[in-house]
Amino acid sequence: MKSMHLWRNARLATLAGTEPWGWVERGALLVDGQQLHWVGAEADLPAGLSVAEEHDLGGALVTPGLVDCHTHLVYGGQRAREFELRLQGASYEDIARAGGGIRATVAATRAASDAQLFASAEARARTLMAEGVTTLEIKSGYGLSAEHEARCLRVARRLGRVLPLTVKTTCLSAHALPPEFEDRADDYVAAVCDWLPALQAEGLVDAVDAFCESIGFTPAQTRRVFEAAQRLGLPVKLHAEQLSDCGGAALAAGFGALSCDHLEHLSSDGVRAMAAAGTVAVLLPGAYYFLRETKLPPVQALRDAGVPIALASDHNPGSSPGLSLLLMLNMGCTLFRLTPEEALRGVAVNGARALGLADRGTLQTGQRADFAVWDLEHPNELSYWFGHNPCRRVIAGGQETNP
Ligand code: DI6
Ligand code: FE
Image 1 (tube, rainbow, N blue to C red):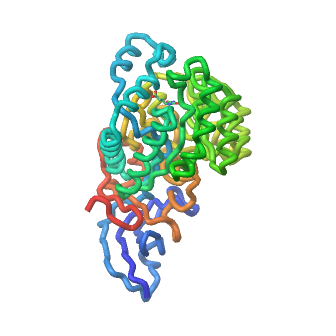
Image 2: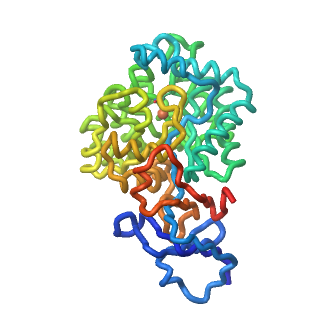
Image 3: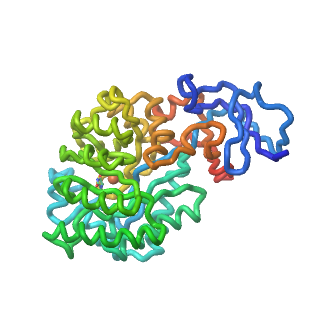
């Protein structure tokens, strides 16, 4: 007989089954090692169990551990001065074209030591984890050379080893043009395609991303990066239609992309292509808010087409310097008109799907035992409060992370 941990007297938003929120009023979770062995109403608990430890949750709300499926957590420096310039009227694109923006962070990242990069990213990861995050995607894209991209991805991997957190890494070397490739974007794309196999061989890459945009890379260049990823069997995702409609989403969907992210300028063709490919739409209200964008992503068209919608922090020093996934739930509802239940699914099951993970995001038998315990009565409060953290306990892979 197995010895399991029983977490009982919980109010469960399982996000599984047919009830709204997958609601179970007086629920229990049986945890066997890193997995959920059984989830349901306490009254239906199987008999004859050998329970090693019992935890009475006192009627607290329990949700799946949260998934932040789009972050740029590893970088040096900060860009508060650019924020001031934008407040005085400069645009994000103006600053980028003048050599600031992403390139400013590339310089600061290259100048930072491995220890500095790790310490700053660890502090950021811990802030996200305190709000119930148990799975985090981290992109490269501020190194922009074989050496510095590898350094940033190694820091991300180490975070996943040191912290009670699953880290998925994404190679975003096609994020901006580094200064040494000025006016030679095609040569830079060729260099990225050349260094990708070594990064993969070192186990540093779970997916490949690009910034397809007038100030980023063209669809033709993005395609070359995706072809290189495809040759290596790596899944792709894309920063698509953030500032303009370049047709990036349809291109990415053609490669079976896991997700297309941002999407404020997504066309109906793009929506159709994503639906056909099963690509997740990752909406990033933090960047929309911080860049004071006014064009809303086509949420109703995505819903109508059955495209799964995820939400993420997009944490980065230029367009979304926030570290609260709960704030993204609130903004997803206030700015993008998601329902609170859509918002929670967006940082749980659909966030997991955007990372190609089918083993988390709901509370169900066989899923990973990642869950968060909240000082809340109802899951709609996760989207309602802001600037305050009601997360009481976090369990990742069956282990309490903040005992
Ligand atoms: N879109 C974004 O919002 C971030 N990257 C991207 O491609 C911004 C990155 C930055 O400004 O540093
Ligand atoms: Fe991003």
